[in-house]
Length: 243
Image (tube, helix red, strand yellow):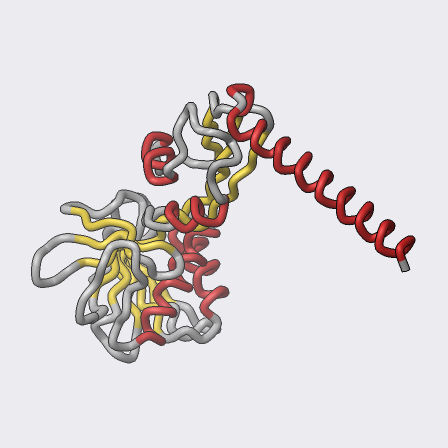
């Protein structure tokens, strides 16, 4: 029995010594100037400023590289409207890398009561409020919603219509084609205006084929000429000058 007690005591002492060594090592790392942050590198951002990312992250030069939790930093970064995702990487001994994935602006929503515009991404999140629409992105009219907030998803009265608008916008972007206006005032048909062209898109049936055909037909119109494209029946498209 005495031998067993001695063995248990020795085992306890060994474990205590190991934990003490680990605690001492951790303390040494936390107070060592070798592990003070000297570099904060931001990568992957085109719209969000480096200074914004650093400020919101709460990470500062001079603090210990292990003194913050990466999950808490990412949660703070999500307060930036343009942020889709973020990843924090520690490069020992003194560098922190914040990798950013940004939201992609997709369309402008015109506010009929104020004449201003909401810039939204491909998921319908409001990125900013603007006095003028973002260039080279469609302006959407005829979509109703009770309220909005920057950094939140837009809640429209007819979510199916809104999802269709976003889908069409993504299709146009993939074809490097940027219409001026997507009009959903008519509950049955989507109308697209591109410069001096009126495009009757109809419903979402064969939407991808319609987008491809529209892009091809537009190439046949002299720039600046007024005309129409009726693509509601994908099998019998019509186009020509306005009369």
